[in-house]
Amino acid sequence: MRDPVHIVWFKRDLRVHDHAPLAAAAAVGRVVPLYVVEPDYWRLPDSSKRQWAFVRQSLLELDAALAERGAGLVVRRGAVVEVLAELLGRLPVVAVHSHQETGNAWTFARDRAVAALLRERGVVWHEYRQHGVIRGLRRREGWAAEWEKLMRGPEVPAPSRLRPALPAVGLELAGGNDALAGQPGGRRAGLDLLASFFGPRGRDYRRAMATPVAAYDACSRLSPHLAWGTVSLREVNRQAFAELALGRHDPVQRASLVAFRARLHWHCHFMQKLESEPAIERRHFHPAYDALDRDDDPVKLAAFAEGRTGYPFVDACLRALAATGWINFRVRAMLVSFASYHLWLDWRATGPILARWFTDYEPGIHWSQMQMQSGTTGINTIRLYNPIKQSKELDPDGRFIRRWVPELAALATPLVHEPWRGEAVAYPPPVVDHVTAAKAARDRIYAVRRRPGYGEAADEVQVRHGSRRAGLRAAARRRPNEAADSRQLGLDL
Image 1 (cartoon, rainbow, N blue to C red):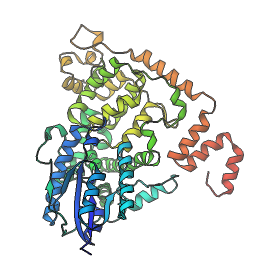
Image 2 (cartoon, rainbow, N blue to C red; image 1 turned 90 degrees about the vertical axis):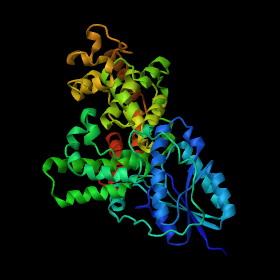
Image 3 (cartoon, one colour; image 1 turned 180 degrees about the horizontal axis):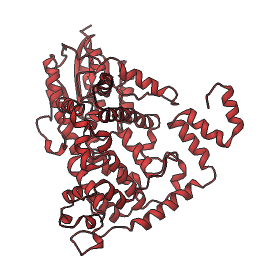
Image 4 (cartoon, rainbow, N blue to C red; image 1 turned 180 degrees about the vertical axis):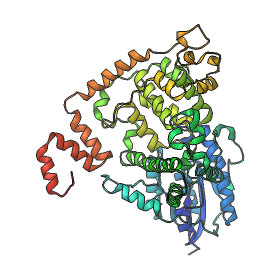
């Protein structure tokens, strides 16, 4: 038999460091480091040229890192199943190595097709955990401990030498509009951000992350690098933990590091929801919300997509996101809330718009948050943000508004938040009255919550996506006998 070949399939893991599939394949035979440009994926409504620009930059750097080790990146264009079938026919492939991916419905279906092909050909597919997400998980007991175990474990060193099975082929990596990315891709850029964030730049992270005025500088800005895997979540977490252990930071910076590390937990917490229940990309967490008659008004949807809702802070945030590919989490929540409650738009209509804008689009986080901020999970507090209150609180002097809504730049500070209270300006009037719209949305949502059987279904959602203990606590409030049975089983309620 010819020297066996191992394919390393790169997806959202565009690095050589802390890359278990690459290290495992390199240790046992010749390798084909493979990336497949999938045209059908890049035509999806939640993908964009902006994301591809970031990926392209990252692939160029990945190719160079692989070439230094002896086997440059093999880039193919087409359906992965067809690309793999062709390689299996040409080479003595014994295994495919890749990281597990919690993607959208399209990538889930693609992976199932790949699994079927490899079973048919008798080729082993080794999938490795990249995040704290656990495949096949039914309940959350012990999840946090497993997360800590993985994230505090040793990073996998990059292999020093690779034995190539094919010459590198850099198809379609020579062209592209890098300006679309907003943030530069590639591992070097990610490591630079990591170093500067753990230095003076991240000192005020905890206090500054709420407002877009300060968040662009104070936040780590690592999210696209985590989404596309130019740095690993484990190396970021380990470095954050090491910084805390050093004890060299003042109380403000230490509090920021603690807050940052907590958000690394939330990253995987939300991804786990989509991994455990892929249908939530299109289906409500809580079935009672299927009865909501959300608006599909094209005028409101266009106003949201164009950043012309008539609410200056909302529009400034939408325009900043569209221009840069990033906005802070507090604002993301506000934008979804405004679209889902004030405009009464379906999250399945606004979700793809936001996904395309986000360079850091991570399906597991995105779709969980779209539902959470739209009030359809059944287990979360209704977050209905007042756009005027948010404007005055997060951009009190109107600096952010004036930058991104220049038609209001000449207005005095009180009026820049509510321009309709002054003289006419070249700016659209509010697309809805926010007070009236908020009341109507609140009444509709709480009418659903009062329906018979709502609480029991919410308990089941909590069990699936929170923890079994939390679900049993909720059940115990209504079913004391069941709670007694649970205590007898040794569950600490």
